[in-house]
Length: 187
Image (cartoon, rainbow, N blue to C red):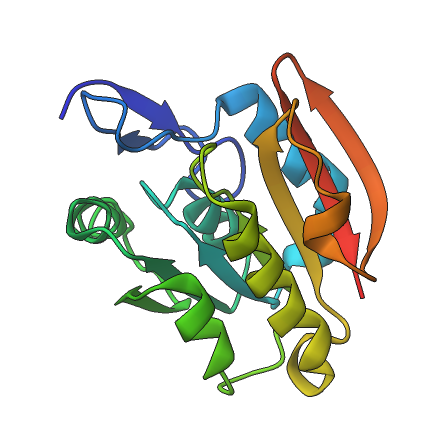
């Protein structure tokens, strides 16, 4: 593992998280992460978060640093799971309820009933099949008992047309960062 990214704000502000030396895992850049968390603001305190396609876990850890009560990190890669666990070990006196789960994201969501989540961070590989994303958004919109008050923060390549992926869900806001877009999506 080479390089680091930092926690932007909160109780772990300045903490350096490990990132991989290759490009198998693409962590969210600091400026993008800072923008996301500025938009979310104080709403993170005592909230519940799903960090899907977690990679290094940097988005979920930023939420922990800013007061999230529950954060589940979900990824299908053993490499990512190991990296997330390693980064979570850096957190001292962490009162957040955290779980790290290796799972296919649509399968995880289809069976998720543990809590009504406030935020979902969705940062899939840029080359992910649009049908997988359609499945994910379909699950979200069809499980209103869990996801009706959820804001999904979706980071994707700017040339991707997500209209067909998100179906009836609504984009609240778009933020542009060079070749990537972050969309804030609600039911």
